[in-house]
Length: 482
Ligand SMILES: Nc1nc2c(ncn2[C@@H]2O[C@H](COP(=O)(O)OP(=O)(O)OP(=O)(O)O)[C@@H](O)[C@H]2O)c(=O)[nH]1
Ligand SMILES: [Mg+2]
Image 1 (cartoon, rainbow, N blue to C red):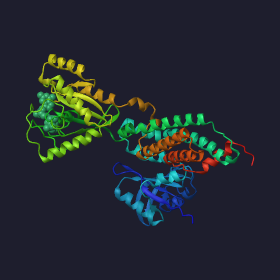
Image 2 (image 1 turned 30 degrees about the horizontal axis):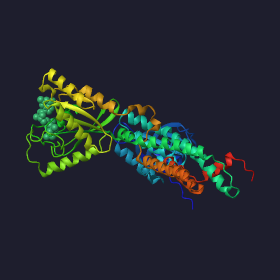
Image 3 (image 1 turned 60 degrees about the vertical axis):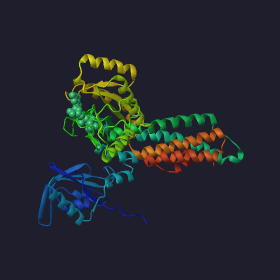
Image 4 (image 1 turned 90 degrees about the horizontal axis):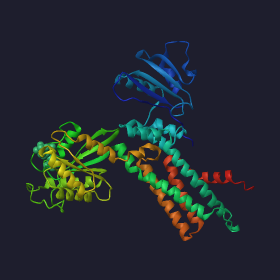
């Protein structure tokens, strides 16, 4: 039985402002709205209004005047959802909005579920799945880079790339399927060498897309920057001076910060997520010869937990600011930086060595330390004073330079969505199996299964899973004559 399509309504704007928008979509949208809306111009007939027209009038319920509003009419299929639609712009009083929704419900509309307008737009072919997902991303985008990625996806840039790959694999699969159809005659349509080449090419594109997820995700949620170092070196002071607010407690007692503290900040059109951590003691940085040099009060249970969290954050960091003090000498600082890099696991995080408290030494001393450090370690070194706010511009530059912004020039090749990432990984492993199949001389029918799997996973991204596609390809390209 075909389910009856309902007419849905919901406010499209969130609280605040002067004007609010209420959306109505579905087969009865115009007739329901015409029941409750009285145009100021009494010549106007809303029931027969054309699409893309706008009317001024009032909304009332029986004798109760609710509001003066503007009514926009959209006719199917030229609307956001593809259905008949009306949009009511009313005054933004929560009471007015609530009353209008109630009246719409009394006249036969139903309340929309979250995302239902966009879901209908997808169902009616107004956009594919990845574009529908981008609608949510563009609403949530809060930095220039996140907006650019969501906007590209919304306009179909990413879907376009996926669709190209899918089409290539479809042609490929159709050749293999043809061979299977003609298996008794033992014909070979597809050149094995060319096929392997194509699969290698597609797989490397898919892998490159999947590898962009780290950047895409960081841009969407904020690039995680972990501030780590021994107790008392000024990690919390650095967080505060970057944020320009007293966010974390600072004191001269080592072990002040127990928990991790996260705050976001925009730099150069990117969102960064700074994570201040509990200081790491020598037990965790075993290579340091400095043990015993610092005042080391007994580490309690809470601090131990904090340190565990620091380690966890280090494993998931994109960038680590390894903070040390200017009064230390070059060798132990370099060893400390190496230990921090070791704690980042296999995450491939970029480590920037930050030498704090540069106000405590002369320029000459700082210069010498810098020279010694550059001989000992190859990571970038920035001298700052959290106390005097000096060196911060250089640090910010290092931070933005650490993000592969070059990749942002081709936003259609950046994956921001975990679902897409999972699908791409599945595409890659299916293609890997197909390649191994060719290499090991596996029967074509099994290789075809792997290729079909890859097509299926690519189709999951854009929402175009249609096994009939393969047949369509065969008949459109080959005139077999029967
Ligand atoms: N002279 C000088 N002192 C600083 C600077 N930055 C921080 N301090 C001082 O160093 C001490 C420790 O600072 P915090 O920011 O609490 O250090 P932390 O690394 O967060 O310490 P824990 O949370 O205990 O690991 C405080 O007394 C700060 O005032 C600086 O640039 N110059
Ligand atoms: Mg601290």
